[in-house]
Image 1 (cartoon, each protein chain N blue to C red):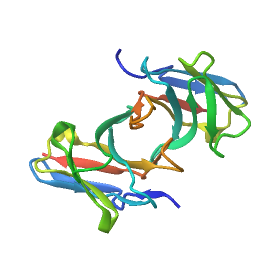
Image 2 (cartoon, each protein chain N blue to C red):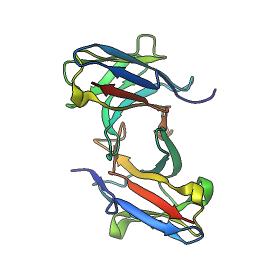
Image 3 (cartoon, one colour):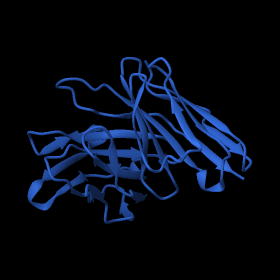
Image 4 (cartoon, rainbow over the protein chains, first blue to last red):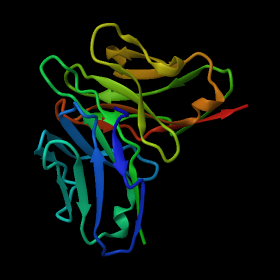
Length: 116
Length: 113
């Protein structure tokens, strides 16, 4: 396994359009996270899944955002009716969480979204 | 409230010089803490982590960090910086439990030849 992968790496869209990003975690990892990183800032937590269950969503995740992890493997993050403020790097991370196992997160290369 | 603070936005060092990047955390219980590095346009790579035990932890690329509970700090160090170390460095800790991370704002490191 080569790590966490994300597609596409770059996305340019016009305001009002919908976009969808995909994340493929490390295969044995049961947790998957989405973060958003704006220019000059550290990543901010958006949401996370344990297997297929979405266990927590940040208040940053407005109603226009939806994330899924249908079979507990890959995940998608969709943004509807994009706004210029959505322009950011969207990072996916995965980890293996279990008894006695520390929750060390491994990050993918990110998807950079530009909304014109 | 849990927080991670990196007081230095930019640091410039000469190649071969020593480096220390500061990180302060605010957390009620014993935290676990991470340092990540990010090259331009790339994702985050884990440099090192502290969970418990020995307060001096070794990481990849010759980096180390020391956890100091009395100072609420987890500073990153390297004895001799290489030009390839130029990147942005993020300190991170637990947010709202141990299920997600909160990151500092990052320190951008420039290395002069």
